[in-house]
Length: 447
Ligand code: NDP
Image 1 (tube, rainbow, N blue to C red):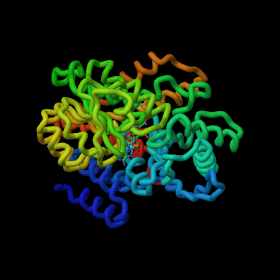
Image 2 (cartoon, rainbow, N blue to C red):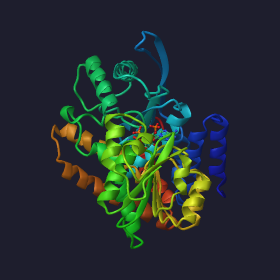
Image 3 (cartoon, helix red, strand yellow):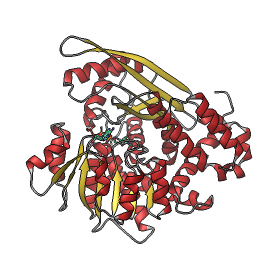
Image 4 (cartoon, protein in one colour):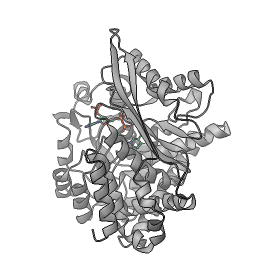
């Protein structure tokens, strides 16, 4: 990088938080792509916007103690990083996974700032979670954990302050337990969480939103080069909320999904995946993807999730977790003729793999733009809660589609304007950054 100011800033971040590799990876990617912006916007440098944007406004770390089914006391660590409120209340999901630590939550919260800005809705960036592992826990254990987690979290959130949602390990069941505890503690029924059940303030199409939105975004990328989903072979990693609804919309748009995975392995069904069976296994039974091949014919199961990128496909949608698609995976995809890769997960593609895909002229949709449909629809859930009204599925879905199309347009236009046409990584970072930066500058230096 030529810009000494940016190099110094990155070096200072590395010195300050050397043990936060995921956060540093995310921060480096954004800062590097801002080089052409800073050449034109000395005012943002003078206002210290960059030094401020990489430091969370507030970080809360807390003990979560709960009692398991054997009566034993368990202790986990809870996090909420309130990263940036320049354009609205902090907004971002809660992740329950043993890999959660401060670096992971900071990377996710940082990404969320720009993603939320891109949605066109007034939402700041935040993220939270815990190193609690929901796998194998009973409903009662999940409930007691969620109640304990919310007992502390409730002191720091609110409908106008910070509005959490789901992420890995947090779906409708967990949001229900968290919402119930917030209501009990605060004696108020407000839209303090999104992803709520439909009987108590949730929005239609929120469950589908991230996966559907990913496909709408991918459709726009393809359209620009005269292509579509029609007749395309699609590989999707993961088999959680994002992956399942990306698979559903892919099929509706005429594509064929041939593979899905979980953290243990992947299934390959050359004639197409039976999505109803996947939903039964993952959403109802909460089982493993390997079960799929025991219930149907024409599919095979393979241990290890990285092998999924060796499958021949036209479109790849990584929808599991960070850094799941490495350089070898990217090379295999290119060798097999992939035309588009779009990220349903957050930062699933390693930096060298992103570069390889871009260098090889693969259409690449970065997560902070391509998976913004979830938080956008969370924003629509907040709007409906404030209006005390519910919109139909079709209305929410239409708004989601419009938002994803406008995110694509904003990222593509910013990429072209700042000298990297077709590079949506740079375009999304720049478009998201400029909105937040203007607001931060306007609001002065101390909050
Ligand atoms: P879920 O918990 O519903 O599903 C996660 C899926 O990814 C599961 O199949 C899981 O497999 C797999 N997975 C999780 N961790 C790993 C790992 N370390 N290695 C390999 N596979 C793994 O989560 P979501 O579908 O909600 O989230 C998936 C991704 O999408 C995340 O990156 C999330 O941040 C991102 N995202 C989610 C949004 C949402 O609205 N839900 C919005 C925007 C982004 P297993 O069951 O074996 O753990």
